[in-house]
Length: 342
Image: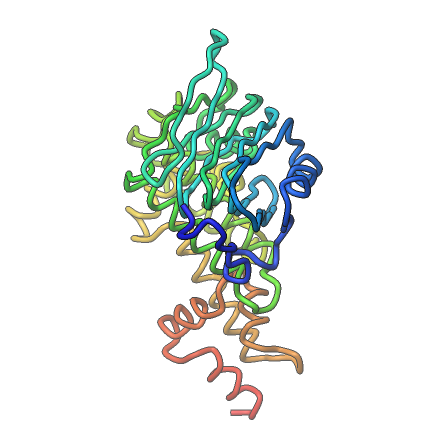
């Protein structure tokens, strides 16, 4: 709840300001915008609460995942149609509830809080009731993308829809990891640095999809919990060859599974056993090597940030740290020495 009834939302301090989609100052403006952008079937705000009214939505879309930041000074009820995406709240402030229709036609109400939230299945109409001052992130993932990612990870063709448990415990270790990934993504998007590279964002989307599948219970969870079979050594070499040839493109688990003929869980286990690292650590080492070559033979416009982004690193600061660990000097030192002919 807001501390005072007439306290304005501190819009300048809300997350994702560069991705603001709705900044409404009246209930009518909020309703019209929500219907326009999200296809809402209805938007109602509480009557009798003193002004000022403020409602905010920021929206980020990658490819198969989008992230919404939601905030509203007043309590509201939003009715939304079913979509092709699976949806989950990650509460920042306050609480609410989600109402879904069961297969028997009864209304089932679920709590939205920092402790628990709802996984809204694809194609299901929903009603969200938010208390005054409610703020949250809403992660939405295309159901087809989740199914494809699960098939690649498990090494089994997932042909039936994924059926998620609707009520989710938001305090499990896996769910807290997913929340940290969301917080990290928001922090990176909120930086005023150069535009983030598309390849790095696609790989980060992949991490979100896999984390979502691992954190939420569903009818295929047993496939992710079973011990994966170990692939043959030649399959590991095929993965290494694929990564080496495609280091400057997004590395997806589907591509690794296709290159090796094994599930990515098997490949990750084999890398751990044979190389004492994961395939993504191997990807990082290959990209760091190419980054060093670029810094040692720079063009006039070469910078550390441009090199980091060109080599698929999402965070230039993390790139500098990894580069120093790998080569014993900061990338800025390599670039400076190269430009001065040393």
